[in-house]
Length: 237
Ligand SMILES: NC(=O)c1ccc[n+]([C@@H]2O[C@H](COP(=O)([O-])OP(=O)(O)OC[C@H]3O[C@@H](n4cnc5c(N)ncnc54)[C@H](OP(=O)(O)O)[C@@H]3O)[C@@H](O)[C@H]2O)c1
Figure 1: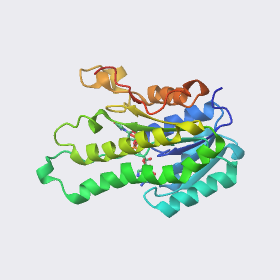
Figure 2 (figure 1 turned 135 degrees about the horizontal axis):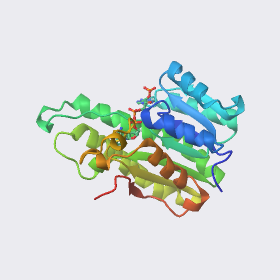
Figure 3 (figure 1 turned 30 degrees about the vertical axis):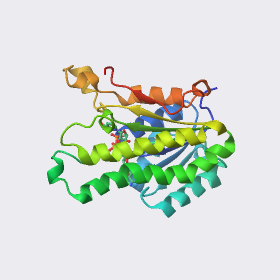
Figure 4 (figure 1 turned 45 degrees about the vertical axis):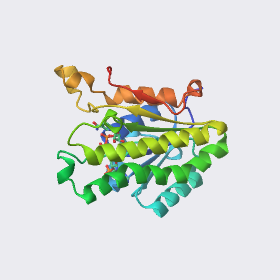
């Protein structure tokens, strides 16, 4: 079975990847709960998707705020009666200097954005996924989480913590028909630079459409046995 009529929560829905994933999920007949921090951008996205009212919900929320995330989950349940798919696409990057020059605030900011938003949405939504006896959680990470390069400590630390959390959730949720998986990308090629002018650097970039296709597979019934995976989408080692 595909994702038609599944209730999918997309965080970071107005981001570079989120917009494309929202469009693909809308095309495949899902019911969408779109989360972002800006009402105007969310309204614009909802307009572009031209979904009927009964198939969409937009919700402004700072996912770093635990109680606000619980309220967002309540809004999804009130509207759709269930939540089945959680696509956590919140992002941000801090780096560019050696550890010696990194501030504690910069590390905290990346932990807030990558770890604590994931923790908050997992605690708010996983009980509902488990209650269905069917659920899918997908997040996007980076090879830098397990092989950090120089000068990227805040981001690498944030992503490594997020990966540890998702891998733990995969072990805990498996018995209830719920899977949790990570897709790894180096750079999301929103502008499709790779297709216009191929360089050694951009050859390993991944388009939002390629990522969306992998997410659609992970959210299918056929991917039931794929759980706790870290799947690289950059075409090389
Ligand atoms: N871009 C890359 O090259 C790359 C590489 C590896 C992995 N990734 C991962 O891929 C995913 C998608 O990346 P992207 O490039 O699409 O990101 P993006 O364009 O920067 O969008 C990130 C989204 O996260 C939302 N967001 C940030 N903090 C939030 C918070 N506290 N509460 C609620 N929403 C928040 C933003 O909402 P607003 O728009 O409302 O501000 C934005 O829509 C992320 O998990 C990212 O870490 C990206």
